Image (cartoon, rainbow, N blue to C red; front, side):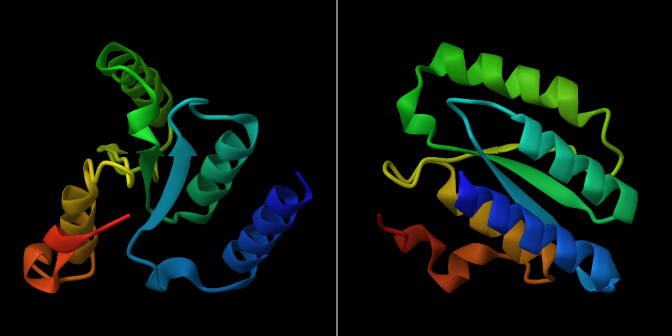
Amino acid sequence: HESIAQWTKAVENYITKRNCTILRRSFLLIDIRHGIKKNDREMMKLLDRRGVSYQLILTKADKLRESEIERVVEDTMRIAVNHPACFPAIHVVSAKHNLGISELFDSIYYTVGLSNGSQYGTDDVVD
């Protein structure tokens, strides 16, 4: 996909040409139906090399059965532990069913120094 290549290049340029020490954490969205793909691995390696902390978010969880989700999470964790800048917790979310969204917002708010995301309306997220 040309748009994916353009987006990847833009992010790579941002990470390599800017002082990313101001970033508290980046979030890498991964479609749970496909798991970590080649371009995701390349981005993870780049973030590792630049020392940019990042966290994996598996999206579209509504598309898989619970047993399949567990398998993808385990596979993802096996890969993630080999990446030093990867934060050791994976979020599984579905915007369609509002699954994991509140926990993700809480994690983001905590990361940026706000203690509790629920006070910012994260319980009211809609599709």
